[in-house]
Length: 291
Image (cartoon, rainbow, N blue to C red):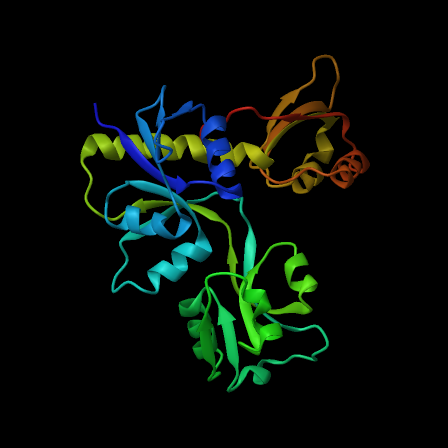
């Protein structure tokens, strides 16, 4: 039987989040002794455990049909290719960060300050594209780590680096000032031809991951309300499609409303619903969803 191949990061936060996604999709993964591969026991899937920078290459070459990688890594890879050999088939919503220009904390920054300066980065292609699109002529200095130290060491005037919490930049006397790319983890597929059986496995795995992503924020809401308040209540429900409405037995003009909300439901939302006439409001998590 054909087995699908998925490249994921070998270790680190993205590796843990990728494995958690598979677990939530009902896929049980058993590691092998080599530490380079892992095998699913209840789905025809093999994992290739590699460096994040290598994931687009594995997928682009067709060694793996699928991969989970940060958009920042994928975009840097794409800019080095003559033509696309991978495509994004799902945005996964975890591993969010930003690739940003950072300057010394004491500087009153504007873009013109970059003109003629040196910018240290691990993402030279994206940095150069950003500079070109901004009409700035500057030199990029490629570094594979400790980019935030470059200004202190006199290697560069500014940096272009990934920012999550911003604590690393702050610890080195820097502040983020311009966003180059907003990144998150994505599921990518090779553009190399694959046979029908393998394509079906790709679709099956994507359907499961789509369901996991949809349920991560979605909630199931049940409430009772006056029928004449339905328009206001429907407008308040966050990210809901047409709700299910049923008359309440023995209560003239009263209905029960059921809806799947695909956005976060906050206490303020419940207060607004109550203000519109809703009562007996229940908000429940959704364990599984097939779109």
